[in-house]
Length: 190
Image (tube, rainbow, N blue to C red; front, top):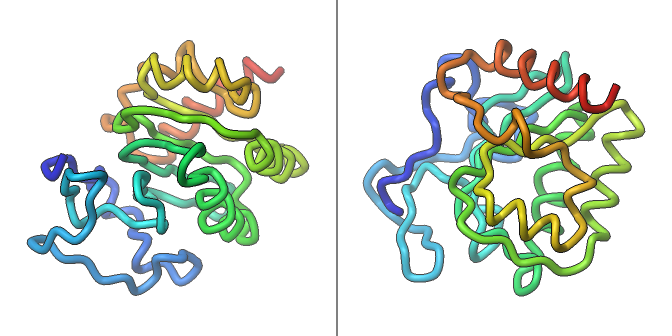
């Protein structure tokens, strides 16, 4: 897992540690010192800790004027033991919503497992963004992770599956990818 770096191809467009509106503003990173781990597996030092033992993120891009953000995830999304959704909602989403972000694209190809608890924070996040015509889209999550989310009945808070399941997202600039995802979302909602 230490070889899995967050995507760095959009660093010419956005860097969270250089964004004064980001909770990661002025965070310094090491390229060589591995300080974070998921269970007994070290992870690349460029991932950002959200104070979860199993879930780490990287805010890849935020467009405040248009109100959207791309967030890449790695690890195990574990609500049962660590209440990861509460941390993700309170520490990340709430601060971004205050800055006008209402459309969240979560990239989950590096999420290995999902363990559910209740749906309170999912419902709250959904209601917060829906009030502003926003949404939360999941792209490239593993099939078994989406199945676990469906079993927990939280998938209705997200736009997921179908064309959002196999997006070759690294080949696009962020604004172009957002427009492609927006067209899928618009067809589903509309």
